Length: 375
Ligand SMILES: [Zn+2]
Image (cartoon, rainbow, N blue to C red):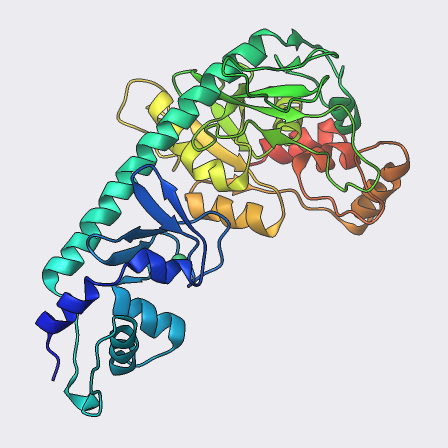
């Protein structure tokens, strides 16, 4: 019969990483080994292997364990079968006829070790993320400084959406970016540039809208700086007003701001709205998202989300717990939206209107204003 003690002695004779190598790609990151996880689909390896401790832990799907767990899970084996397999690899004969006598549970110490490693890697990733954010921030500063101010709708994207540039910039026509380390940032010349800042007005990253859209693209292309911070970052349009209106993309926020004249926030995505609302509450402590009077001396500023009327937009707006409004279109409005396809470059013939920019284009800024003042 085999007990835990025997198991650990022949476990130590097998390198966990070589078992992983036989089924997946294993790579070294500094002093650590990471495998593309064999237990879930992933693009970048997130399954950490510790040969010394004989443990693996996947940060993607949380699968973890030792060599036996690995053999059981990859080979669909029972525990005794995994022991037998390992024994034959190690050249040790094991009689596994008495299978019922096996039981193996990771010890408390092993589980604690697993958690400790998980925490260490989490902290390491945090440090790495901060480094990548700071690096992107310094590049963003430079690209912003080297871009030129634009006014009105002086960019094809703004022209198509019918909105003005509020302190935005454009990369120059022959712009070629080379970073100090020699690595390039793939910035299209003539791109519209929208800054991403935190509540202390620190510039963290940039969003780019290239000067043209391909005929087969339904949405105008846009991209963020690689490795740059997005979470909790936003862009403010206009000076302080009693209400603070939050929208997803630039064109929607600009439409809301143009209609109401109130301060409007570009949140960049529906998934970022909750983080932006928190950041704004730190920036304006008097912000009261639930509209009841605050104890502070300052007047309460009400936050309202001007959500996109699509599944992701409405779900995210609901999740914030903040008051929200979304555009509604009647059949005539949908028809009108589609007929705009011929006159502007931003609408596809079968597209459905979904945000307040579409609303402004269909019903006009006066109607949008009425709709947003009613809330
Ligand atoms: Zn996994």
